[in-house]
Image 1 (cartoon, rainbow, N blue to C red):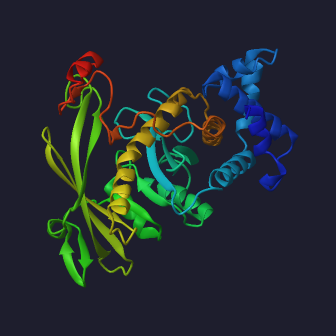
Image 2 (cartoon, helix red, strand yellow):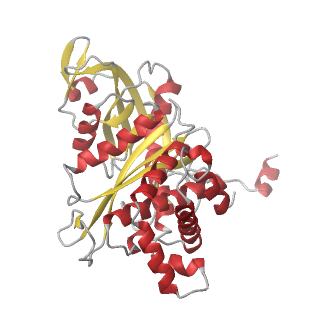
Image 3 (spheres, rainbow, N blue to C red):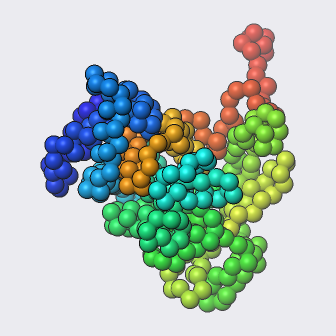
Length: 395
């Protein structure tokens, strides 16, 4: 499927309403320009379009047409409709956030702090959908904000509104995972307290309380009583600089068990998973996990969910790599409405690339059930290979 064909699909009659020829032409220009330029910089996009007129004139036209609330609403709704069409109860939905920094910018509307004292920018929440059996992912929604936009309440509220849009579109289908590198424990607690949906999340604290067999327990005490009878060895590829100068392939013995619980003052049945990871290098690590999935009585059902949880960071990392190819921090628009539409257009191009090429979620998973190949430092001994000549001598 070409980018032009994808544009036709976006603006087809199935979208529900027409947006007019001027908006259609602009939408085509932006998607083709971003796809060809690998950039969100309007000068680069204008250059990629090569319209045969002054570059500045093309750039000015693109900037002016980005200030379009009708087109923004259309594109957000259309992309969400397309991307959620095959989301099922077995799909994974990953909530991820990041900061979009413009360190030296001063004139951008609603520019706000991103967390570091001297940096300024915006925050972005994305929800990604994963079909495990197909090993592909797709972005469902992209939401940009700062603490200076009108009607801003909190970062938590902005993330909640983003997740609500997805859950409403899917009819509450899918199992929600939270990127623990960007979505903190307080935010997770806020989200799961707002509405009912299926989730799989690390417990914010082992001091939290749950109910097991009509009795309140501190998670830490109940965790110690869970028999972790299912186990397997997996291999974690650790990036350079985290444990040593080079990459390390770390062998981990994972063992897990589960108990049925409820949250205090909540009648919904949940499962507390005790996950332990043991390695010679780091010792034993204990991870309490809470999920709405119940009846995890077999090795396949329990360890399958655990492995899903371990692969989430691989998916997020891949998406970050795909997004970084467009150098989104190089955007140069001055109004918030233009910025929002620009990032929705980026989502559309990423969606197109994944749909047209069926990109794998993980080419080299950081967590794998077999040792990683290549020149790596290892925390285990690899089996010695016997060459063919030695094999013949043995025979």
